[in-house]
Each structure stands twice: as structure tokens, then as C-alpha cells.
Length: 356
Image (cartoon, one colour):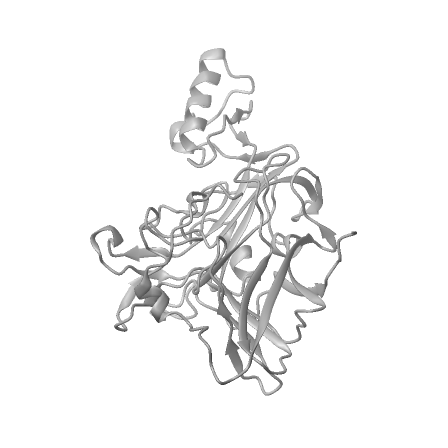
């Protein structure tokens, strides 16, 4: 059983979502399966993942979850037909949660996992698939008025938007992707230079080591709750590398009923021109995602990438996700929007049937 509390969708939201009521037009069931791999090898909690990043380091998985929305099938003419999503613990008519962590090994979260999105579409022949990684900003109520989805109240949101582990501090928004790893040997990063002596002694005294450790604890990402190791050169080493993608630069307080708007949406557009849901699944390729990142050393900002435009680690991740990390031209305001270069982190692969 999932530990998450499921809250029924408000009738006004259900009424606005894609209808699955009886229709003269025939419909077909749709099930889109996802898999998590690094290159061609499965990624699982409790098992080492080899050859990641620019240094080809091994790592253990801590978390791997992401939201999917705007799911549609594509026919031979390129026409996109939306899939009407079922409602259950893992999805509602607007968004679904894919979850690969299961509390084994270093993984946190819950025992339950989910690798499939279920729904229906008009009967027909389809050859491709499109979807968005992220939570839509808005839905519609029965009167056609906007209803907040991404920046909605966690306590009253419908599953799967009620998951605490996917909640984020950006104006009560959601993490679109939560990926966390523990690289072998940890992640080394600089301690804040403003608080350190200009020339750190080669072997700090006990008092100096205690001071550096106190600084390290202050500078460690708040979500890790870990105890960093202080090195003799003044750097620190933490255990976890994290990638949390979500909308940033947000304005508007959803707790007072305001509709939030964000300068950098950071939603990943995925288009798979050839896809057969019966024979194939969608693969999130960890090796491709981390191909331009050094997991063993962090150059600044949060350890990993928290969608900050000043974080050196975020640039390569935005690039492979097909998102702009910088404006294409002054005043274009297109940071965090599709760059025009297709994403390279999701691909299609054959389903692997489990042994009976």
C-alpha cells in the first residue's frame, strides 16, 4: 500500500478534465510503461550504477521520481491526440507520477513504485508519443476558470500532487524531477571563501577543524540533513548529489488564492517519433542525463542542481533536457523554455518481460 494520502479530485476539477464518459466514438485503452536505465543497464535501488558523469564514477540511487503531463499519441500525419488519464493513487486527469525508488539500499521515500501511466484515447493507429515532464500551472474548473495545479496546497491537493517528497519551496510548487545519488567517495565542494582564511593551513588545529565543520553544516543543502566531512584543504565532502527541477522565479502567493506565474517554467518537452506502447517502453537514461556533469566535484551553488541559473552544474543538465539556460537574446525572457534542440534524456526501448 502507498503511504501517500489520496485525496479525491474536486468535482469542479474533474468536470474540467478530459472526459472519459461514454461516447459514440470507440476508444482504446492506453498504457505507457517507463523504465530507468544508465546506458543499457537497469538502474535499481541498492545496486551500484557504474560509469556516471564525466569521471565515470559509480553511485548508489537515493531518489528517482518525476511528473508527466500533456500525454498524447501521434498519428502518421503528425496529429497529436491527448490521452485521457485514469484517476488512481499515481495519477489524476492532469498529471501522473513515475516513481522508481523503493526504500531499498540508500533509497528513501516509500516502498511502492509506479512505472506506468494508464488512460484511453480514440481508437486509431498511432506511431509516436509526446509528453511533458512537469506539472501544469493550471487546470480549469466547471465554469472554465483557472485552478492552480503546480502551485496548489499540498494538504488539499489530489493525488499524486499530495506527495510530500515532491513538494518544493518555490511558492508551494512541485519538483518536476527529483533525482538523488550518492557517488562513490562523495561530492567535494568548496566551503564559502568569505568565511575561511585566505590560506587554509595544511593541517588545521582541532579548533579550526571544528569551525570549518560548523561552516560546512551551514552551507550543506538543507534537504540532505547530512554531516559533511571537512577536508584538510578547507573543502568539504558531502554524500549526496541532487537534481531537483521545478519552476523558478515565481510570483504570486497560492496560499492566499493567487495564481502563481514563473519566469523559468523548466518543463521538459519530450517527443518520440516512433513508439509502440505494446512492445516498447519509455526509458529515462541516467547516463545521458549526467553525461556533462562531474558528480565527484561541485563547482558552486547547491550540491548538484536545484534549477538555479547561477549554478555551474545546471548548465549541462538544461542542455540535455532541451531547455534554455540563458536567454537567446536580450529581453527574450525564454530561460527555462524549450531551446529548439530536442531533449536527449528520454528514449524508446523494447520492453523486458519479467520471468513468470
